[in-house]
Length: 508
Image (cartoon, rainbow, N blue to C red; front, top):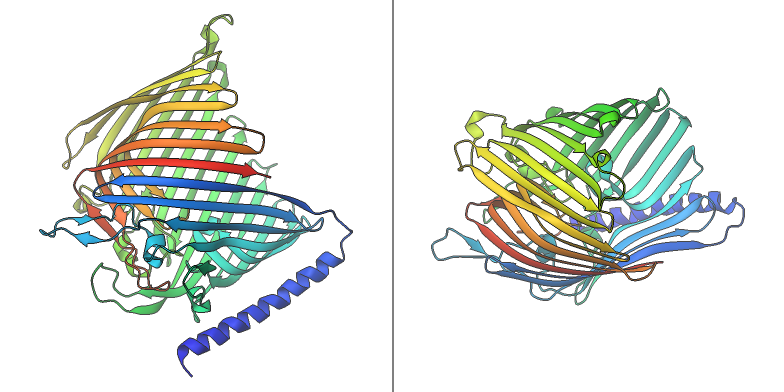
């Protein structure tokens, strides 16, 4: 019997096991008093156009979410989306081999659906049963606090005391496969690899009436990964086993002051550490925040095990950073009849450098950033933000200056914003978490409009032009759902992007 058939049989066995758990939840729910159905949710329909760098992306996406209360203690949650890309991006190489074009907007959705057929995916769909001090969740869920994507399985939790909560979950990692795709065939193995499993657990502690909180999380993951994730290189798959451990503690002795620290380990080696302090001095209307963080490992150390289900670094290379921000409100200096309702002064400083001097490069820079900004607001709902950024870099770029801000006006129910933003180092993912990018020295000019048409219907629009001096793009050279090469492609020449985003939201 082929391994593919065996894999399907194993997945069918999993379905049977989870069906037993579902039956148990249904039995518990049946014992509850009668309860009227309560349904609420939201539907967002989005049109997006992106252009630049010899690439064009034109797509429509609709995202649906709902929460259906079946009984007093039982509810059904659903998040899904349908997508149609009208002109998928194609990865080509210029004649001199120095630049890959038409890749700027490429991501996992294009890689797994190259023929651009209409597709529907379920991001989460689960039954949730809760008695307050204990509960269970069965189906497709997300494990965000474990830096993990979706899984199909069971989560249990219990809170025997006000100061203690325990949870555990397990199941199959969910791969980026559609529920249906026009012209395509859905295969169980597109969702679950036969030998792939995930399990995890955690605890939350709270003492001193919530002034002291601590949490611990642990994730164990076995999944198919690529032995060589370099784009264009021969590769093979194997079962990789990884684990992630995280701890966090927060102390808030007063309402105006809190401090905390967190750390994580990947495969029992230090991955990251962070500490912070934030608070306010109410008598002088001043708030402040101090933070420091370190990343100890490089993406190359775990590149062969990175898939869309694994934890991703918040930067591609080891680094350390420290920042300080202070905001002072001067509203008390103005008499009430004056047209200004608020005026603030903002000061900020950030230092970033590679953890190891030998790692200094354009994509792992060392810099000191100084920022000063002023915010003005009027009683008739106008606001103006003006900022200046000075960036002093070491070894890779010249001194940078950035000036920008935002002017906004709110007419109930319309909110209009015109402005510019600047980031020295920006790490971001898209709404599905399948596209990851690092951008350096990025300035964006934008126009945003949001209109609350009714209590249940809203319309938003954003047009933007972005200039990026340096950027890294996630490769999407996927051969199948189970073989995904996420190794980062680096580009050292400036980027210019133009985007238009139109969204219509309906809440019910």
